[in-house]
Image (cartoon, rainbow, N blue to C red):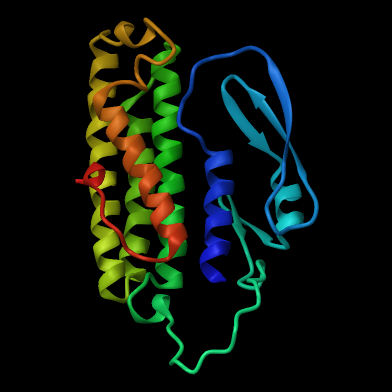
Amino acid sequence: MRRNCWKLLISGLLLLLPFAAGAQSEQHRRILVIDGQAGQAPVIQKNGRAYVDVEALTQITHGALRFKADRIVLTLPASNVNPPMAEPSTEPAHTPIADSGLSRDFMLAGIEEIATMREWASTLAYAIQNGYPITEVWAAQSREQAAHDLSLAAAAASNESDRNALQLLTNEFEAVREWSNKLVQERKAMDTAKYAISDNALREDPTSQKIITCGHFLATMLGSGSFKDDPSCH
């Protein structure tokens, strides 16, 4: 039950914070429907991005919003999804999250770190693709915020699965940091025109692809509540 809730939370984050995509001028309206939940929320697609109203998403999932500095955090109740009735069993109950899965506090902190890194990377990519100035000060502020959230995840790690997942989060942070430094230096050297050749030039860069793949994997892993490994995060 708790795992399904985190899957919903991850889905919400991916809708709200996508990686930079190709530019489009049209707006397309769609409807977000969450399986097992009553109600729906309007979705607007603009410039290759999908936007959903956070308050509508909160109402559908019976969650709670809280505001943390410049962030909006959506928390879903553990009872948000009702699992199907199961036949009584005489075998001992198995609780993977408590025994060998990821702890709740670490999952929360890990999701926050993914959101921070995604915001850092997507904002940088959009600026580079569109020729906007990027300063080392801005990049440093984004890096420090991601490092801070990573330290919170490290503090929340309480078992072996948490610590293994933390290593993957750390690897992703280091990959984004190196990629950010590279783009900032290229911008200073006026060597970013190659990323404006096409809308997907930067996105299809091997380093970008590795960061995106690892980010999606980490989001899915945290949503499942169990540690898994993937080569993209190494």
